[in-house]
Image 1 (tube, rainbow, N blue to C red):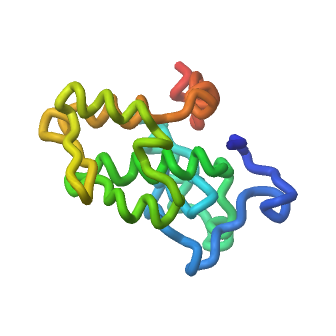
Image 2: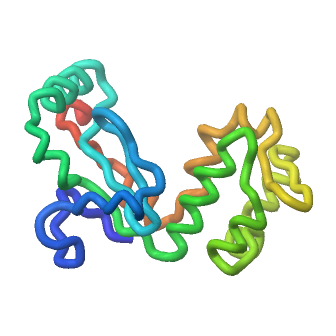
Length: 171
């Protein structure tokens, strides 16, 4: 993966990451600070955590002309490993869990082979597996705020450390 903040990539067609065509869009985010995903991109607008950051970002968001939304200013290109991890995170953290057959159909391998650390969730009774799904138990869902980051790759975790998109969040 390559963190582009602000994005400037020849592969993406110049400054910023071009918004994908509707046919490629898999999880579009809506609104200020929303994250969006396509098969090979994770992109977003600035976001803030502190109230003053959030207010300033919303004001800026509402004042932007429509053409500003054709290019995302921040994003990451997802390689195969990151695509697998993102798929698992987005699926496993939902009550219905991850459809293991759909994972194999998309990636050509078993999720347990690609992310062997998932076995720890089973051993700790934080997840259950049947012939069709891998899903979190109620205890696992209660810990989803820890499980999601636990599944992030070391490379992405390193890029995320200390990264704030709004200057007020550094204070």
